[in-house]
Every structure is written in C-alpha cells, then in structure tokens.
Length: 101
Image (cartoon, rainbow, N blue to C red; front, top):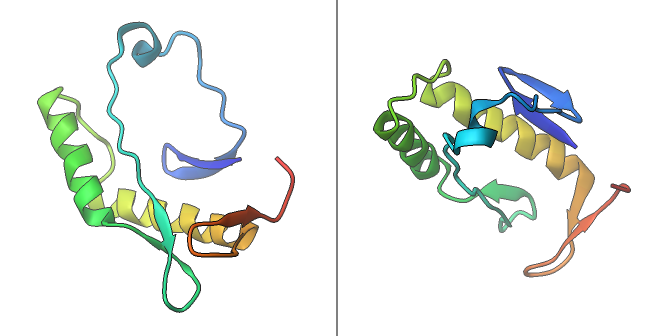
C-alpha cells in the first residue's frame, strides 16, 4: 500500500518501535472518505474541513507540523489519484479493488 510520509509517497511504510505515539498515544487522526461523483470518479468528502480539524488538533496538543494545510491537502489528492487507478466504483456504495493486496 502506498502512503504519504514526510513529504513523499512511499510503499510499505514501517514505523520504528521507538515512535513516541506508539508508547504515549501522542497522535492525531482524521478519517477521510472518498465517494463516487456524478462523473464516476472518486471525490474526497469535505477535505478542507478535515484538514482544518487536523491542524486544530495538532495545535491543541502543541504539535508543530512541518507541512502546511495546502501541502497536506495536495498529499491527500495525490493519494486519491493513486487509489483511483487501483479501484473501480461498481455501484452506489461499492468499490472493487483491481489488484491483489
């Protein structure tokens, strides 16, 4: 699976066991969904709202993020494009993966 990590899209990310978030729960999370648009493509639902909440959560935890809201939004769009090439929207709420896990 490809993910965006430290400004790059990488394959099969492994997180070191010494990562602070694993031991102390110091992390933030936003669940972001894609849905089928009228034109048949995937669209990211309320992306800017998700990213604003993400940055608000970081501020509450006094985390300094090294990427701007715009950079995170662009990263989400890049990942969506990668995923769009790997899935087919087959029905109202059904997505079919086109390649094995």
